[in-house]
Amino acid sequence: MRRRAKRNLAVSTVVANLLMITLTLSLAAILVAWAGTSFGSFSSGAQLFFAQRGQSVQERFVIENVYFINSNHTIMMFVRNVGVEDIKLVAIYVDDISCSGASTCLLVSGGGLCTTLPYTIGVGQVCEFNVTWTSGWSSGSIFNLIATSARGNRATFTIRSP
Image 1 (spheres, helix red, strand yellow):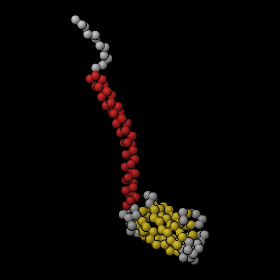
Image 2: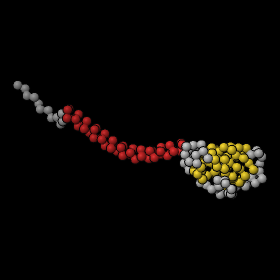
Image 3: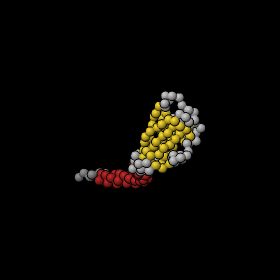
Image 4: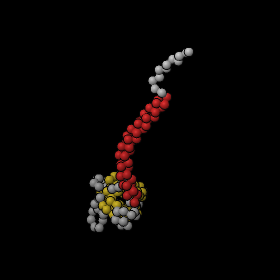
């Protein structure tokens, strides 16, 4: 009678498959735990971002009219809030020059004008800003006016001087 030779096997096929499945599941659990902490902190920042963008979408304002007063080189600008939230204007620019202290562009004070920035304009209200352009202008010059809010929205108006 012939005797079978004993085979030396380290692990059976079933046990090897079970070990591979266990290893794969444990690596997947580690990956999920790592991704959960990473995306958790990202999503809280994203929620804040989208909440602020939601408010800024409700903020709408326009520059309605612009007039030139040649006697003292003043640009009269009317800003109207047409949105559903109050706006806070923080800057006015004429040809990319800020009108809050630059030597060529100054906000005129006095009367019932909106003269100090930042200035809050309520829903449906109109505010008149007078800007002195000290370097003057020639006839037919093109001016680009920009009003900027605290939430980052902008209203632009392009006009040709008389």
